[in-house]
Image 1 (cartoon, rainbow, N blue to C red):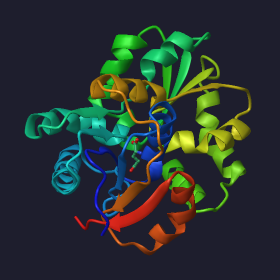
Image 2 (tube, rainbow, N blue to C red):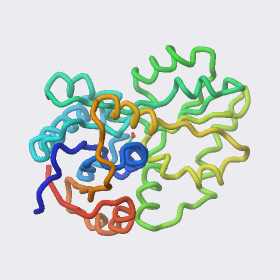
Image 3 (cartoon, rainbow, N blue to C red):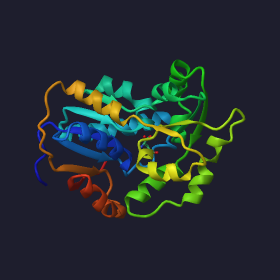
Length: 267
Ligand code: DGL
């Protein structure tokens, strides 16, 4: 096993979704030493009951923090962030940045005040999400669409297989069938979904604004690090919690994003 870069930023998700956050981070802070961790042993998080998910995320981050000694952790997963952040911040010293649905910017951008929230079944039904909507989109109609299928399709795409656009069209139909009218803005409230943005665009009956949290997270990380980042790109590493066969299929997508090292930390 090669040595870990000094004080990396740890990006954590159940699967490949956090790579959308990784893209925003590396665009803003190209020299940042990074470790990308996938809890593929417990993927997908969307259907997990809340209390069990908090325990699982805590256990995995405990192992990851011990192994990689990060200077900061990005919980690049809305499903985990909307329930686990208070416990993580209480139990670990390292600072955490969480990703939650971008309801606030979407409400600012929507012209017809009809917004879609595309996220996992867990995220669309969380009290945290209800509160975000009450605080920032009280004057909007929010059409919530929870989907694990879409998460699976993002995983499949990164393994080199195409997404079925007809099936995607059907899946998205409820966003355009609300009695008040079609959505004009959609929150991508799962980090897997920006990885599908071309397919989403191709499958919608009319143009919509897709809003995600990537750039806001990159700005937040930059603010918290409080020091200039070396501009040389560094070989990042990707770590998985299970040695599943399909990890190999991710190698090209990971290499394209600068991940030269793949390793396993069974949890
Ligand atoms: N990428 C994740 C999110 O942002 C979780 C997907 C899943 O494991 O269900 O919610």
